[in-house]
Length: 395
Image (cartoon, rainbow, N blue to C red; front, side):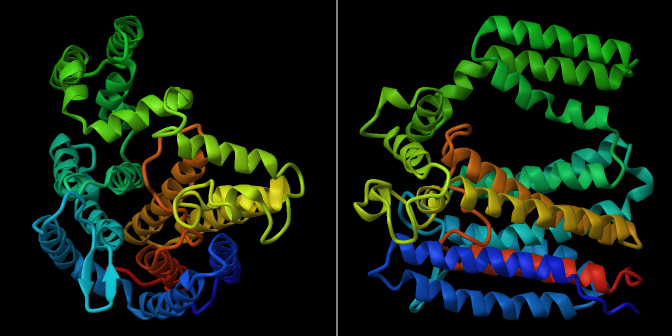
């Protein structure tokens, strides 16, 4: 049995976490946030080693138990009072179960798809995977937490692709979402719908596939105004402000505008550690959590942002290599699922901070303040080390 350690993966993850603590300190130098994050880092390292040492066959055996416990805890959170129900507090300790649910969904998809690897092209298998994802998705949306809910979708797509789902099938699964996006006006939606019909026709899709996909996209195009009306007002405003931050420069658009100012003012080298008006004068809201990348941009400029982005690229490259080297499909699905959690979080957060994506509230993996997020990210690194070092094991 191989006991090799992927030192690159380990060092990069710890480097990102260390950068996060420095940025949190620079964002809130008079508070204790950075010291709490340091404690969470040590707790996360413990979780990392636990996930590292548990054989994959045990995770495989417990896959459905992970899923059931996750749903129970998420429902418990949803039944709490208040408009925002995302946390469970036990004395002075609070944690966000939806963060742990990401890892639980990776295990669930791994178990489900591995058991059905010879039937992956069967529509029933795909529908089953969608239903498994839709349940926690709906619960987390009710908290409400759109960003985390979307992570479940990323896990689903990445897992299906790794299990052998054809690219065309994945496109057809994503087509309702694409139809929803294009339906902002009838002209782009009509163009999209015609292209979709052409793809279905020239791919020689069977009627059992052609009809449901076409009907689903048609209905979404027709009922998009009703769907828009069902979205919460603050979520509507986030989307509208994303398209035009200047529509509410002192309200919903304030964060994005100040974030862009912070990043742009850092120029090439940045203003220096503990320097910067946007951070020090508190112009930038949520600077230690969702918008911490803007703190990096202001204080360390283009160079600092590039270094962090390179570290993420190295991290994702190692994850792909670990998945490629995995000796069985179960381990490969787990590795790519873990990669989807980290990649989606980093991509959406950085896109949000730079104004190319709507504000969704997703933390930047390893870097943003948040104990549950950091512990989950390090636990994922432990699982990846497990897959790397125990490649010959599996169910």
